[in-house]
Amino acid sequence: MRKKIVIGNWKMNKTVSESIRMVTELKNLLSGKQDAEIVVVPPFVSLHPCEIALHESSIMLGAQNVSAFDHGAYTGEVSAAMLLDVQCEYVLVGHSERREIFDESNQTLNQKLKQVLEYEMRPVLCIGESALTRKATKTFDFLQTQLQECLRGFVEDDLDALVIAYEPIWAIGTGDTAEPGQIQEVHQFIRDYLEKQYSKAMANMTPILYGGSVNQGNADVIMKQKDVDGVLVGGASLDAEHFVSIVQHAQ
Ligand code: PGA
Image 1 (cartoon, rainbow, N blue to C red):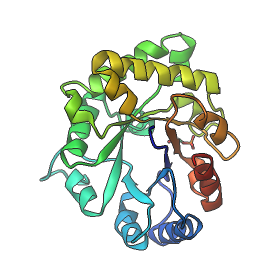
Image 2 (tube, rainbow, N blue to C red; image 1 turned 135 degrees about the horizontal axis):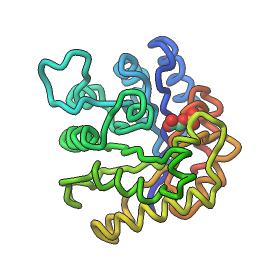
Image 3 (cartoon, rainbow, N blue to C red; image 1 turned 180 degrees about the vertical axis):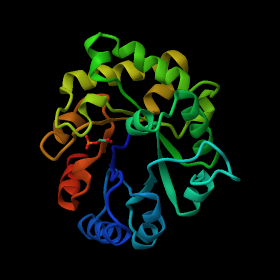
Image 4 (tube, protein in one colour; image 1 turned 90 degrees about the vertical axis):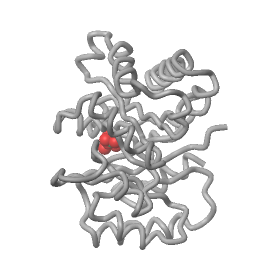
């Protein structure tokens, strides 16, 4: 059975001191043994302080982004080696805000995936369609192109650590969650795609998460869908108690 994964993406929220307070609270609230993998994804500057605050906790750290380059003269960039050094285990790749606001292409994301995998962290490849694409009934074609272009050049053995997050853009930060049936339909499509391109074993092993207005009220029904292996939570992950109650639905 695939273990459930619950990821809290804080986006550009919380200063270093607020981040430390937040992870300390989470550590206290989630001190027992957890069945799910719990990952918090603070801004870059908070990663090292959170690493220290989370010492001896099962809560893991993730990063919101990574450079497509390995090291060198790339002002403002943060490399995979730097993330690994502060004990990041997960890295978001291709969040729709990165794609839309910062123009990250599937080709760039392919390079970022390479970096994350080379440094043996788990990339969480985010894919998702806009409202316009869904209305035009082009969702599956669009997602297939994102998968094809982002995963180009990798063979199955390279992708052991891959996590995929389906995040319909129209559901992110809008309160407008996709229907459980819509979510399951897309997750099944992604799993079928992995089976066609790689193998049944790879399709069975790869966690597929849902993200887009997940909260304590809808997490349970979303995570009960057959092909949903966890959630990527934005807004509701900023409050420790809300986040913990989502984690509890994953147990
Ligand atoms: P949201 O964000 O939960 O606030 O919709 C999800 C995400 O962007 O990962």
